[in-house]
Length: 381
Image (cartoon, rainbow, N blue to C red; front, side):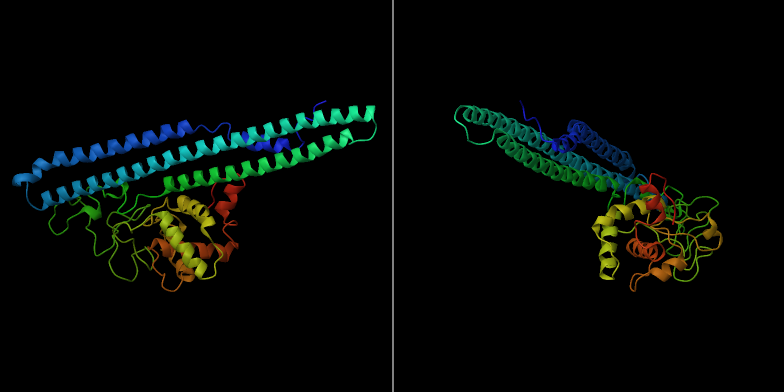
């Protein structure tokens, strides 16, 4: 009779089955698509600069309007280069992920196959010894009990299966970490001054030349001071922000968003905020990056200049602002000393997380995260 596989072999089968549908070659195909997109972005930037070059060379077009135009072309081309760099980075990361998953899938399958081979070989040897013991007992009496030989093999088989299951579990953990790393990179905003979305459209306050009339938008008021309409549903139009402190004309005590994006990207801002929060006794670690990212993604889309000018808070003169969409009173009461700029992405995250802990007790109890974890949609906080 055959001893068969141990009862815990099902754990090995179920763990190994998790990689059966993993197709690393498809990941490589996606990496190639990113690489192709990067090449196309580089080509478009080069074509744009080449098209504008004849106008700027030799004094064909001069004056404030020309300067503004060439500056705008340079912004678009620079954004194109940053997009290209980001696509290149994504292509490399996906290529690394493909290689990592290929190696891990191979290791998992080998672990399962080796464990099965070891068990099969042990069963074969145990049966031979058990039969020899039975024959010896029939002929001479005494000797080792055949069933004890089989039971010893069964116990060793259980240990082999358990070790294989643990090994596969560890390999699956490595695979999940590699995937999460790639996912975080995909979520990261383009560093520096951002991509195409950060280039103001012709006629927006950021691209106007109020002192020369170079590219002003007919019928709109020029921006005053260092403010600006900002992103994420900002006030726009003639409701311009006034530089300096004080009220923002319906924008709350901190006024409108400053012009231009801050340096860095969302993941960097989250990590910096977590470091500061930990130093101030808030129980957060880098394990919470994805949770904070999810809140930011739904609240502001990752735009540190986002401002909500349409809801009930906005009607009260305290619109939600920044990455975590804090209103000024809430931000002021939850900001840490030295981190009181609502438009600073790190300061905004700090206040938003501290508010979440004060009101709900933990990130896990944040209504949006709690709803998502139970299969529902995101709920604002």
